Image (cartoon, rainbow, N blue to C red):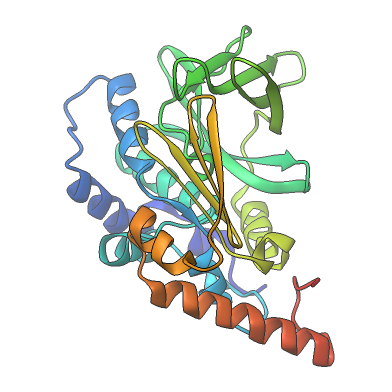
Length: 288
């Protein structure tokens, strides 16, 4: 790799994207650090998790540095087409925004059930202590990293819970409802270097998660999750599942504000990638 993280992943080089975010959501700068961080994370959660833009950007090529959706591109896609990104592009954009506001933050890599180092989030240090912010998981408030862990309530009885092992620096993240708790991911509270983060970001283009479309968004009342033609709407402890095969593009436009052309292009790209893989096996990341 000829281009290093020092040339690409420098937050200061992408402050135009941070200013675009600040202007779009009219961030109030004259707040105490915790209030300002809460304001930023609340508005940042309006950027959806979606891999349409990532699939389209990858196309039929092998992953390379030009395929990274950096802060300016992510914000342009959000303003014009209501797009967002996956955890890598969202985390680096948020890291850039936080750097723009002089926060002390760093990116951490996380393990999930489907693999190691496939998720990322940020840790922010404030006078009150450390806090987890996770734009890829659409966490809209800072969650404290303390000996007792912390909870973020999405409703009266559901949300995220952190279990922190201070001795080893291991943080485990669970979702919970009034009925159950599920492990979602874990990470060590230590910053990942720029070059390693860049390697993981490029590798993410080859993961199985790139084989099908996936979108998630949250608002004050609900969470919408779409994978392939399955949709789940969660409101508190109430969950409703839908088969949206016949009206996928309509539902995405209504629920996310993303026009059908992006669904069509992403699905077409997936078909072409599978065809090439079946023909000569040259497309990495396709296993179906």
